[in-house]
Length: 114
Image 1 (spheres, rainbow, N blue to C red):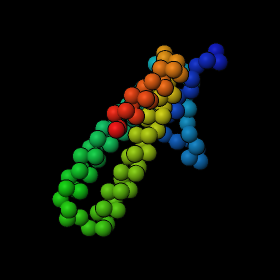
Image 2: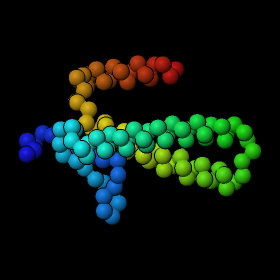
Image 3: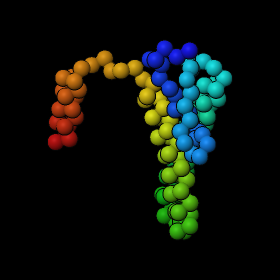
Image 4: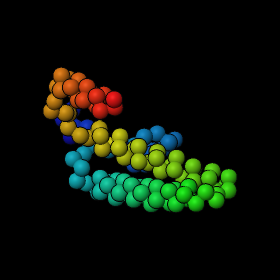
């Protein structure tokens, strides 16, 4: 039974009609393990595709069709990685800092850009 504070996990696949699919639980069940394995596979595939993209682009001898296919594959992979990041980010605990600390961090980042 949910206690009202348990976060839902965004799963790395879509439900019927392409809608997001969520899981309620403590993260130790069978579906959680399937989702973990699928996320790992998606991240591995993204890393391999990134390496392939670097090689293809470095050759500078691609056809428009090859470049289009690479763009399609990168788009799909980026969508998968974004979904994994959203899912994992939503399950992170709330930050331990307050807004004043956050403002200081932003100031430091801005100063490094100068």
